[in-house]
View 1 (cartoon, rainbow, N blue to C red):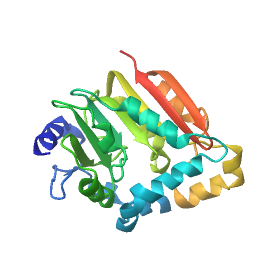
View 2 (cartoon, helix red, strand yellow):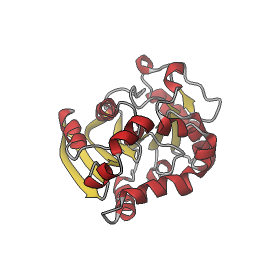
View 3 (cartoon, rainbow, N blue to C red):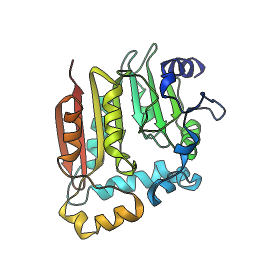
Length: 250
């Protein structure tokens, strides 16, 4: 673990750090103090230690099943996507808004050498749970903002953001940052919400204002990826969820 965290700290861009890296809690904390304040009800819940304790086994799977209403296969498609994205060799993978590391650790299972998966999140509660439950020899956690990723351009072979983009307060900026840090030829994969007739019935606009939870239009995420230079953009819809993959041009 010490070797991996040293290598990841060396990857950080000093011009993009909110503070000097702090390892006190077992992860690299580079978050600006003012960026730690939650925005919206849903975002505030993600900072709650009680939710962090049940998030991996109950909360996130329940949300994933909710997205499946009116569709099918969300969980199985998610498993297939994770298998496709699993790194090999010395690849570097970034898991944005990783929460307690539910997907972070599995992404590292086939890595070797200097390969590493970096799980980044803004929540101290989630990261403490990640360090406790989902650590690994090639897994490193970083406390930072998805809106200001603390890495240089083209730092990662693969960047993912799974079941989290809908809680980020400025998702378009987060997508821009994701595209910035993936290297030429590298992959991006997102799983997030999708606005449908059912979400309108459920009052999605009101819920968004109160909670900060965002439902995305069908062409919104794919358009943002293309705007940031990604190609081979593919979208798979499942109920109120969407899987989107893309590649940065060589």
